[in-house]
Image 1: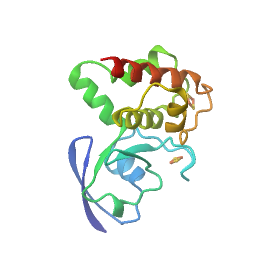
Image 2 (image 1 turned 30 degrees about the horizontal axis):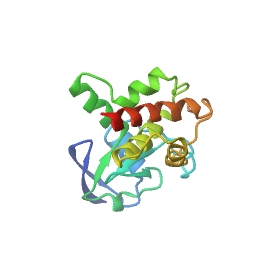
Image 3 (image 1 turned 90 degrees about the vertical axis):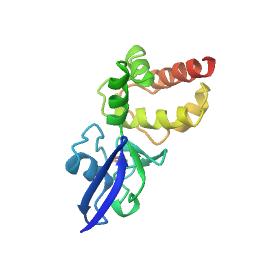
Image 4 (image 1 turned 120 degrees about the horizontal axis):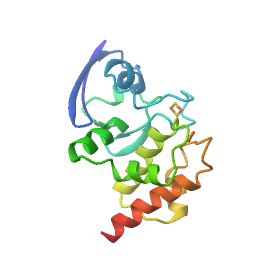
Length: 160
Ligand code: FES
Ligand code: FES
C-alpha cells in the first residue's frame, strides 16, 4: 500500500492503495464518484474518460502511481460546479437539448472529452469535434446529435 494524494474535482483526496490500482476503481469504489462509468475496461470505449491535468485519459488504464500530486476532474465535477452556479454545465444543457444522450452509458466520458476539447479552445468544426471524441464510443446516437451539441456550445463560447 502507498499513500497517494491528489486533487479530485477541486477537493483534496488521499487514498492508501497499491500503486497499480486503477484510477477508475479509486474514483468509483474508494471515493464514491460513480458518475464515471466502466465499459470495456481495456481502453477501447472511453466510457471511463476523466481529465488528468486537463488531458483526457481512460481511467481504466491509469494506475494510481501515475496520479500522485495531480489534478483529476470527473463528470461529477461538472455537476458539482453546475450545482454551485444553479445551472447545468453548458455541455450538459446542450446534450439534453439536442438529444445527445440516449442510454447514457457513453455520456459521462463523452462529456469529459468534449469539456477538454472546449477548454483547449476547440471550435465548432465538425471534423475537429469528431476527432476530439474519436476515443469515445456510442452505440445509440450515431454521433450526429453529440457532435451537434458540442458544436452548439463551441459556437456559443466563440461568439461570447
Ligand atoms: S472502460 Fe475504460 S476505455 Fe472502456
Ligand atoms: S447514448 Fe447510448 S452509448 Fe451513447
